[in-house]
Image 1: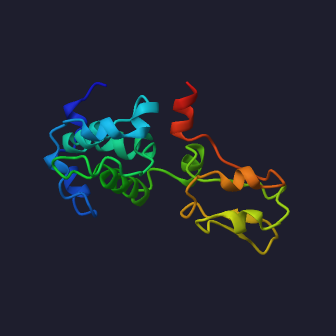
Image 2: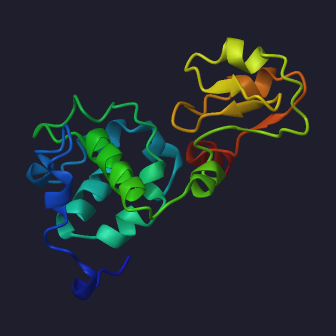
Length: 183
């Protein structure tokens, strides 16, 4: 990746610091402890939590906020306890996601394509309530029109509803991890 100084925002890290768990973003010295325990880094070539924190500190705002790599993180938080500087990579990535949403650089369709939430095909749904009963996160509900809808903000993309829908009305795009594991 070529970094062009003219495209860097040297104060970008300041927009991340106010988010919970992000106050130590500038303390990272790139030791790689986070990358060593990251399960996503093992299957998604482009993903590296250490690199993302470094990009924040360099000011690579557009690459992070407008790109898709921040959405690969599973938010398992394995990186947090291993950092000797108490840099909370998962929290920083969560803050970057919130910034992308706040700035409207991404939309629901983009997130759906990344496999971050399931979608119901209203033409196939029979409103059997299977997804409503099985979802541990309360994401699906039946709308007045008589079919299920999944709330993207509540969906964890676990795939339970997809697997158990008797009408096969629910779909979920493969996640970064699933695509990385396939290659």
